[in-house]
Structures are given as structure tokens and as C-alpha cells.
Amino acid sequence: MKKTFIERKFTLTPTLTSSIEKKLERLDKFFSPDTEMVATLSTEGNREKIELTIFENGLFYRSEESDEKLLCALDRAIDIIERQLRKNKTKLQRRIKKDIPSFTAFDDIDYEEEEIVISKIKHFPIKPMSAEEAVLQMNMLGHEFFVFRDMETDATCVVYKRHGNTYGMIVPSEE
Image 1 (tube, rainbow, N blue to C red):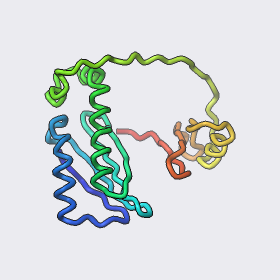
Image 2 (tube, rainbow, N blue to C red):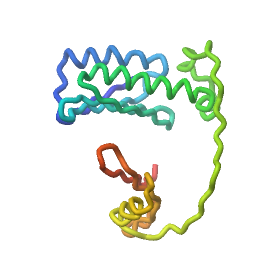
Image 3 (cartoon, rainbow, N blue to C red):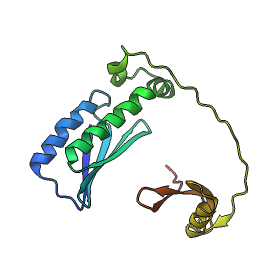
């Protein structure tokens, strides 16, 4: 796996780098060598936080954990990625439509596949507005996200609540 480390209010020592890389070797059995992984390391107060984002075959795997010790948070973040892979093994194989050797580690375990059920469909007009107006509308409705048309770009976007009373925005891009 190709690993990239991003430091935010954090200093990565060579000793810590080698410890992190050794722990991340647990994921090598699931991903090909050309898979890209970004680990963002940061400090929030007295807690250390790690965000793992893995890109493979157009799919994203992501986990975020914090702890007083970074390596404890890293162990939990790796466990989350492994759970995502185990839970969605069959769906991922069907989507990619080829035998993925990376999933052979779970071949001896039989997992029940959850059926995806859409229980409600809503139709509503998407009106042009600014991101600030969309956040205000989302908060007034008491929702966790809100879909709107950006009045500047005319793109359909989504604003959503993040941890720590902040907001995020998803903007479509052409690739």
C-alpha cells in the first residue's frame, strides 16, 4: 500500500512512523500494493487523532479515532476498516465483478448479507441558495444533512453536520 502521512498540529517522529507502518501492515493482506492510503494525524487538546482514508478501485474506506495514545486510536481505526471490509465483502466482490485475492482472509467465515431496504422516498424542490442558507435550513428542520442547489455554481450540493459542531459540504466534481 502506498502510504501518505499528513500532520496537523502533530510531529511525527521516525520511531512513531515505523510503529504506525508496522501496525498498518495488518491491512496489506486486504489491499493491492498500488492502493493509496492517507493517514491524517492531529492533536486535539490532550487527545491524539488519526483518520485513515483508503482509495481502491473507485471505493473509499474511512475511519477516524482519537485517544490519549495515538497507537491505541490507530488499532481501533484499523479494526473499523477491517469490519467495513468483512461486512461488505460480498457486495464489494459483486460490484467489482472479479475475484479479489485481498478478501481471501475472510473466505472461511460465512457472513449473512444484509438486504438494503429503502423504506421511504421523499420528493422536494431543490432551490438555489448559499451554503449558509442551506445550513440554516438544515438546522431549522433538525436534520443531519440538507441537499440544495448552490446559487453561484448551480451544482447540487449537500451540507452536513460534523463532529465538534462544525459543518461539511459535499460538492460534485467531474472526474
